[in-house]
Length: 239
Ligand SMILES: NC(=O)c1ccc[n+]([C@@H]2O[C@H](COP(=O)([O-])OP(=O)(O)OC[C@H]3O[C@@H](n4cnc5c(N)ncnc54)[C@H](O)[C@@H]3O)[C@@H](O)[C@H]2O)c1
Image (cartoon, rainbow, N blue to C red; front, side, top):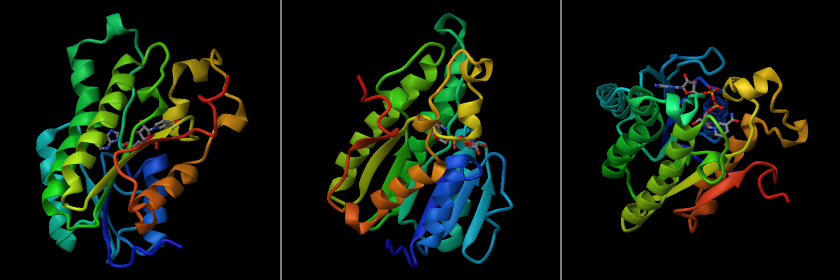
C-alpha cells in the first residue's frame, strides 16, 4: 500500500472525474490536499484540516500564481503536483482562431508549466509531478487539433521537467489516458451524435487513472521519470 502520510499534494481539475479520483486516492494514502478547480469544491471531498479547495481559472496566468500562493501558504510545502485540469475544443483546424488556441493552450499547457516551475523551486528531493496528457498526444483524429497539440506539448514538458528535476531528486511522468468515463468524454460531438461508438470494454474509470497516478508519485516508482504511459485498456495498441 502506498503511504503518503504527511505529504502535501496539489491537484488541478479536482472537481472533475479524473481529478476527483486522483484526489480521493491521494487522500486515502494519507496526503494533505490543495485542490484547484474553476468550479470550486465538490461535496464528495469536503474541505477540512487536511483538504483545501481553491476556486481558480487556470486559463489566467495571474490566477495560477494566486492559486499557487494561496495553496503553498496553507501547508507550507509541496511534495506532489498532479496537473489534471484540461479542456477540449471540437472544431476543424480552419475554424479554430487565435483565441481558441490561446484559451486551450493556457489551460492545457501553460498552467501545468507555470505550476511545474513553482513546484520545482519549492519541492524537496523525493518530489513527484504527474501530468495527465492523453492518447491524443500520440495519435489523434479530426476536430481536436488544438487539444492533440497541447497534449503532445505536455508530454514534451514532462520530459524537460524530468531532465531539469533530476539533480534535485524530483521526478516527472505523464499519463496518457484513453477513453475514460467522465463528462469530458461525453462532451465529444461525435460520441453524442453516435457517429463514434466506443466499445464499452475500451472505456476506463477515473479510478484506473488515479491508480496509475498513485503509483507514479510513490516511492515504488522512484526509478521512473520522464516517461509517458498510456492507460487505455489496450485500445490504441491493437491492430
Ligand atoms: N475523459 C477522458 O476520456 C480523457 C482522456 C484522455 C485525457 N483526459 C484528460 O484528463 C484530464 C481530466 O479530464 P476529465 O475527463 O476528468 O474531465 P472533467 O471535465 O471531468 O474534468 C476536468 C476538470 O478540469 C477543470 N477545469 C477545466 N478548465 C479549467 C480552468 N480553466 N481552470 C480550472 N479548472 C479547469 C474543470 O472544471 C473540471 O473539473 C484532462 O486534462 C483531459 O484532457 C481525459
